[in-house]
Length: 374
Image (tube, rainbow, N blue to C red; front, side, top):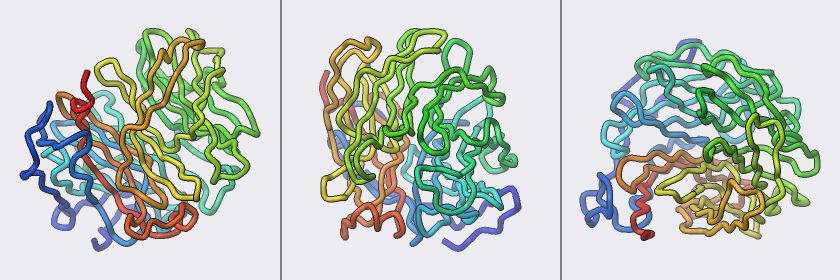
């Protein structure tokens, strides 16, 4: 794709440049849902590739369409103002995707986009940082920024919504409030923030506080009034070690958290979702030789009871290699979900360390949980 003409607020549209497609017409009938699927995972395919390092995906359903956002415009993980959040629209549940806009900040890196629907608008949250490398995100001045659109094409200028040392990761609505997990510069704390409207946020509590555990990306769900957060812990000797995932539980007003349980796997770039009373998570999987994969897991056990036993069971390893994961998951009907992730070239299967500075592509597939049985 050629670069689009861009305004300072990062809005550009060229439908003639953008359609990417895949076909599933030869697939077997679906177990349940609108797509023809052949198993748990169908049609793993690249939907965007431009020779640059593309990453950090999310998906949403809004205004009768499916929306994909991801970070592009860079040659690697190291941030610069070249980073763009590319917004795509699909009117056929992911068969074809057409770019509608790019959102960026002229003097800052922007990454980790999340899409929400608020007051009838499509809202984009992201983390904006000072350019350059940041070991453990230290010194990045991680603003959480918000942009919104009434049509998916024209977007407001991204504005800071919280303290400039906290990057928001996951959002959830409960009891008339919006909640967000966030991790701080230096990756020493994970906090819980709340907002009545998604614009003004205040910190509620610390979920996890530990320098040696290196806590960061934290998922969030509510079981009744019980809040549960899954917290990534990079607490191995190096970033190449497995690490852990803490399971943290809190009761209203969510001031104190019990993080006594852990999985012995580190789940990077995760997305936790529920279906038919079962708990699933899609995240980056670590291989001992320094390589990575994107995988789908099921969590079995009572997450809301801090004393209950839990297990993390791998269900599928997606086509992925090098630098990968940071996924989007969107229900599309029945037992089916559209999922997105990014990956380095799967044929060369390079290590994660080199994948971070080499090209990577955006992938999608359909997941049909009906094939798991009841």
